Image (cartoon, rainbow, N blue to C red; front, side, top):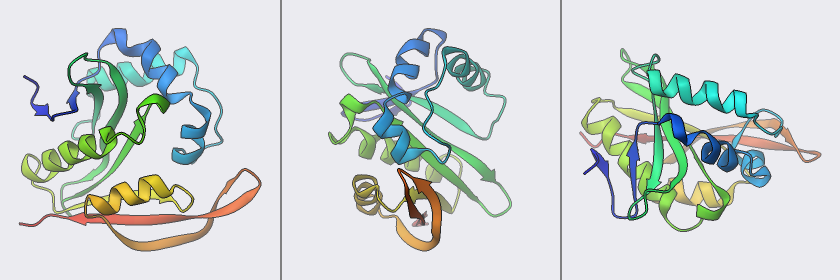
Length: 176
């Protein structure tokens, strides 16, 4: 059994043979538009290899990147992680990405639930932060369902598809 095990998904460390599936997941254009500040250019195999090698080596600890795998068939469906770890202020930022075929099925919700529990119960942090684009309604609803609240907005922060959009700052606090 995996340490971060749910009913639909589990979180594990990346493996070298995750490269092709990972790059395929991240290169889904609509997902890149909704989740990446950079222009939505495709990720090359070499960029994907560097990303996975960095995750495997875990040189950034206490920043963590987890592969999200579907329970039952062990299919790699995305990744999530924490970064900008701040031990003094006991907070971090999180991010998630799912392949196109796995969105809207509760996988992301469960993966983030597992990640949040890890952050609060294993790392003893007090606050989890994230940024989400104002047009990414499915993600906003998921974050709200998890208990995240809006803390602020960066007006006209992102130019995407010929229009300016806000970036919403959200946070979730430890109950302890």
